[in-house]
Length: 294
Image (tube, rainbow, N blue to C red):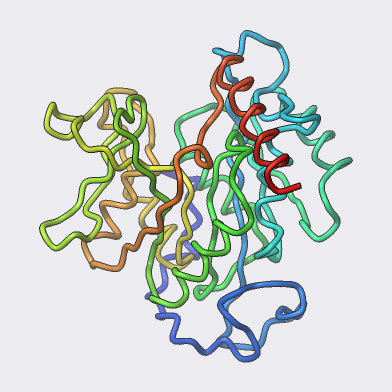
């Protein structure tokens, strides 16, 4: 169990999103959303996980603040939420948190409605997500919550929009972003049931030899139904090789009800940055993308 930090207000019975969006479409935007959503409608919120120390970067600068094409990685991630424009974005900080807060406050777009949550001790992505969600301002049971890492600067607004739209259209409890590589070493693998639906995600360190052969991997970007997210987080344990609360274990819990969906994207877009070599690679990809689009 995650313990006392868990917000039990999310433990209500999930009310399925039935398209009662009243004036909304599957494509979210400021025009579609008022500041006071009507009863029975769904609002969208986001949690950006930006607490990691990034020891492999070999720098005192917090990892989310390393720049790609002149902008901190975490700000690229915020930009990827532009098409969906969540009502608020909770940025979870940890290592160098004061500097991350200062940078994001100064440079984030005004629509982002940023708030911050501090993960004082790093106990895994599940723990960080819990802290980030509890910093949101009383989300309702019908709300959807995007959870995404702060070190994936190549994510696009179009892909996040596809993910959210798919989540709403199919009334999922969770929709996750996946990709495929011939050699996805280092990434969690998507384990599917016989009918092709998502069963669970197994981390590289905990995978069996057969699971390591799976080429579909987890991009670490999710849309959860809020009413089911907190109960799923409360069931996490540290029974794994890292002795951490894995957010991916929540997928196993939610998949038992068969309401977990997925959206695929090309592998470059979901690249995370863990060292300077990967940072350089991501910048080259972004420059090439900008040249192609320009």
